Length: 233
Image 1 (cartoon, rainbow, N blue to C red):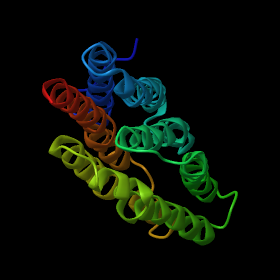
Image 2 (cartoon, helix red, strand yellow):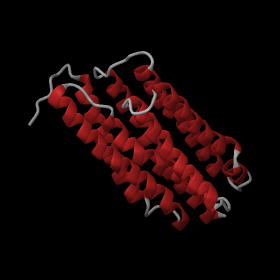
Image 3 (spheres, rainbow, N blue to C red):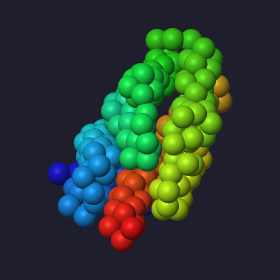
Image 4 (cartoon, rainbow, N blue to C red):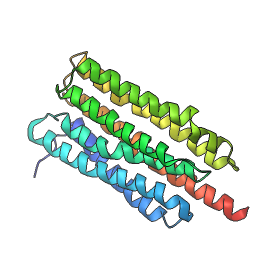
């Protein structure tokens, strides 16, 4: 069993992320009993995304404790699953307010997977870093465009009740502000020559509080409030 040093903030940040993701997963799974039937899917998808995060963070922590370095693959293997799940959860959240096409679903899913995968190719030196960064940025901007100006926004904006619109607003902010750390990290490693001495892992672990935990809790809170709102309507 590895023993933490008191000053090892990187290892501590992995544990904080691990415990927080575990608590979030349990809360979301329990929370599926508190929401309406059409809300169980987005809440469950967020729970699965948090569960995937647990495995990814646990692996990365073991690697850090073994050699005080985390190869980039340990970050991307979790993101490649959890970020598309969260995008799909946001799609089904908007879908509770109105009809959305299957074509939009598949576009969001494919683009979110490619966004993460292309960034990995660049950081792993399999693809030219500049090209990888630009393509990943375009994919992220496409997702934001759909969330802010596409049919999802139209459906939510014309829905009845304030809770869904407010929840969708905050979730879009998380995808905009919180997810910005990933292209930023990609930029620093690809162009600024940053090597992960633990500081980048700490930043990613702290970002998990917003990007995985708060995202899931926001979906659950929105689901509960909308369910209660519909029950009293």
